[in-house]
Length: 225
Image 1 (cartoon, rainbow, N blue to C red):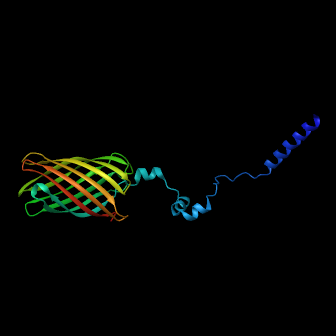
Image 2 (image 1 turned 45 degrees about the vertical axis):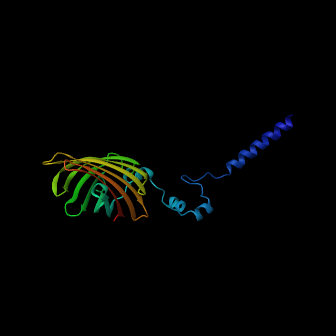
């Protein structure tokens, strides 16, 4: 019995001595990545070389792109009349959640509109959902009759994939000097074809004391110009 106790004690002392000879890992050391995974994955190599700061991206990276676009639209209520459009959307002022936007829309000589506004996004710019109250000015020519005034509204943004695909709903109201308030509803579906080009389809509804029109359009946009 004493012999087995002696053997057990000897084995225990041997194990303790072997463990004491193993050098401790240096502070801050990380396990080496799988060499094959590192070799075959460019994304993994970038993450190893420069780990992303996800919190910073959410706070400062835009889930929506700044873009400049041109396009066409047609209005079924005007026998499919064709309009030409130009837009500049969400130029974010550095270090803030404030953005500037503008657009121009023209059909023939008696129908056109243009406007500019400022939006302030309530949530961080990298959020998948955001709301931005907006305030600006709009000029509309409807059947040759001009209406213009201050415009107020909000943008509701759903980023399905940050900077790649999103849906935006923008209701707004124009308060002209005469003729009663004008209601505008704009629905946008955007999809990035590549890092520089984006395709956006739009549905716009304009209701005024003169008439009501619904138009459908498509824009080709340059991203981050």
